[in-house]
Image (cartoon, rainbow, N blue to C red; front, side, top):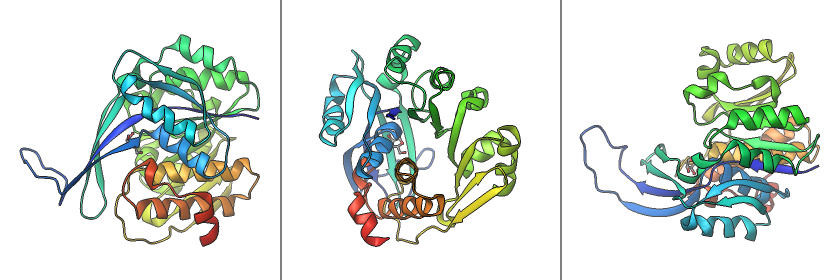
Length: 293
Ligand code: RIB
């Protein structure tokens, strides 16, 4: 059983600010860092740090070869990471004194992935293999449909929200890992219970994890609900907290861990990530999470 992460790779330009910049305002930053990021990259790193084997598919430009190298150093198979003659995707990230962020994305190579490239990647995977997807590359709907038709286990993190999300073929997704903002966007509901009921009503076999920020997370499958509180920490930078949760939760599921423990590990890993600056850099290693458990 293989684990494929088909997702974005970004160069994150992170600016530490007193507060998030307002319209018309110019504000000097207190610190700047160039970080490794992208939701696909971060989630792959979280899976790798959690001890999983990962195949990574996506696209970078020549300026993103250091990100490919990092994935390889961490043990990922990058045979399906294309190097294209365009700039690597990047993100401009503002982080305020409370650790909250605001992000501008430039898709770059992430948005140059074609349906033909996708079909070639999926030829190397088969029924029962997992594919983890986010919403930062082109033709995510095509990947969901093709992977689902092949009998792969599609795990979808519909982030960030975009109008296309309304038209994704969710019936092919076995797992949906989302936050409250994405839940409201998909269902029109504002209460977590109602979001889950609405999604389960439409996709009765789907397993869902709804993350609720400092209020923790809820797992839903059929009528089953399992809750997990968040671990309180002083937030330094919330970037990639959701990615850390996703990678750690999925890693635990792949190991056959029970859902309650998987949620606990994921919440703990995410709380550690929040207490540190950066995106992929802030994801803890397995030993650290196990030690705290
Ligand atoms: O989820 C965090 C990520 O979102 C950042 O690393 C940034 O690249 C954006 O994709």
